[in-house]
Length: 107
Image (cartoon, rainbow, N blue to C red):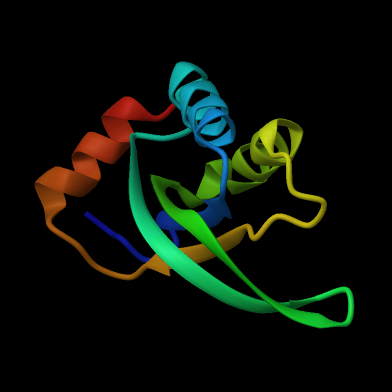
């Protein structure tokens, strides 16, 4: 199965559990994501002229690259950050059965 340019991981962060749940539930319900994984992190960043730090959650979303625009639009509409991190990372190779599962679970 050709993998190049077909699958991706979309990454974002959030601080409120309710925001993360809203994003994840929406993406899964609309079949825009096959899987979402959450990890606790500590972020350090520049924001409005100051260096800040915050406890956040890192969200990895497995999906098809062809759905990225819809994923991004949905995430923006459900996110509470003024400027949310939304980054698409292409998957260049992977276990074929897992990638087939992404195909099956995403619209």
